[in-house]
Each structure stands twice: as structure tokens, then as C-alpha cells.
Amino acid sequence: MPPRSWVVDASKNELIALHHNDSYLRYRTHTLSEKGDVVRDVVESKDGTVARLIMREGKPLTEEQDKSERQRLNDMIASPSAYFRHIRNSDAERKMADKLVPLMPDAAVYTYTPGQPQSGKNGGAREIVIDYKPNPKFNPPNTEAEALTGLEGRVWIDAKSHYLVRMEGTISRGVNFGWGMLAHIYPGGKLVLDQTNIGENRWIFTYFSMKLSVRALMLKTVNVHTESTASDFQKLGPMSYQDAIRMMLNTPLPDR
Image 1 (cartoon, helix red, strand yellow):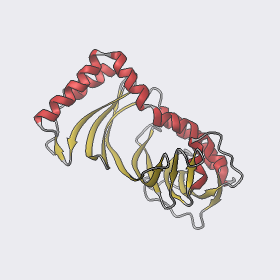
Image 2 (tube, one colour):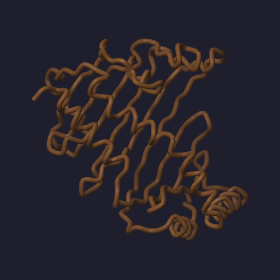
Image 3 (cartoon, one colour):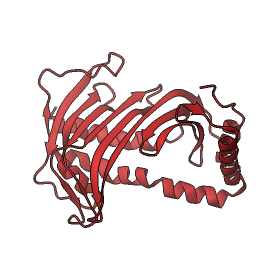
């Protein structure tokens, strides 16, 4: 089986994982970035995902911070139009993934990794390990896809389900967006993500790390460093976003 065929299957499965129809979870995310250290309680509802900030800088929210967060969430319950506007705005990352993931099989040249070194992150299940480099024949169909022209690295794909287990990527050469007028990503950036089957073939990201140097609009160069983990997964039945928020608000803040 050519290595590209594994990537074709994994790309199709990734779209399934991103949209996870008729499957709902509750979990925690812990994110470190330039904006600080935050932990959120996350619930997937029929209407979309909702999240409650529960810790900041390694400590539970203060009474004042919790009051502000509760007010924000209660405002969403009271105003469905505001909630769905929030969902549309926050859905940009998923829409970008919907554009980029199907392009992966053609954006790179794929070869089997010698020795097939396993990631150790798949519960002992066998993985197919594939190296990738930019495909010089790839013509990006949109601005977002230009990011794929400078990415190389390695992927681990579950041999049985053909789902992505791990991806490592490096920006091997500078990438321009809009001929460099919109943005430029400098070489040396790193991307790592892990994905786990938490049961019944429901795959979800459990780790994501991104380190990039980006110049925006030909002006200021900024260093972007984000690291996020997801844990404590619980399966839920379908519920409205209002009920999801109420469930979170009825949960006491963690001690630490």
C-alpha cells in the first residue's frame, strides 16, 4: 500500500473526528500561551461546544473572577443569538481545518519511515509511520493552504482504524501569505499534536503545541507559543447548550 494511501484515509477520518456527529464529551483543557495559564471545563452540546474558565495561573478563580465568568455564561443562556454569534466566530479554526485537511495527501510527498519507530502513545497498537516533505508540484488553492508549502515532518497513523495518532511538523522554509503582504511565517517553527481514541472510535486531540515566528502585515514580528492538553474525558448524552452551561455552573470550582 503506497504511503500516500494511508494519508488519504487518515485525512477522511480526521474530518469525521473534527465534526464528531452524535458523540458528546465533557473534558478539561489546560492551555499555556502568551495570554497566560488557563484551565477550562469543556462540554460538547448539540448546538456547539461551551467552556467555563475554572483556573488561571495554576489557581482556582477568585470570587470576583468566578462571578464575571458566571455572568458571561448566564448571558449566553439568556441570549441565544449572542451564543450562536460566538459559535460562528469561534468556528474559524474548524473551517480552516475543513479546507486544509483534504489537501494533505497532495500537499506533500510521503515515504515510509525506516524502522517504523512507534510513538508509544497508542496503547501498544501498531502504527504506520510516514515521513513527509513539501510537494514541489502542489499549487495551493487558497491563502490558508500556503501554510502547507513549507511544512515537513512525520505522522503516525493507527494501523487498524487509519486514524491519525501523532503529527510532528517543522517549517522548513519561510511561507508567505498573500505574497508576504498578509503574513510571513519564518523557518524553524514547530508543530506537534497527539490524538487519542477515547472509546467507540471517538478520536480527539489530547495534546497540541505550536511555536512560530510570524510577521503580520509586513510590520511587527511576533513569537507564537501555545501548548494545550485535554484530559478527564466523560461521555455525555445530547443536550442543549443552555443545559450544558447549567451543568458546568452547578459544578464547584476545583481546589487546585
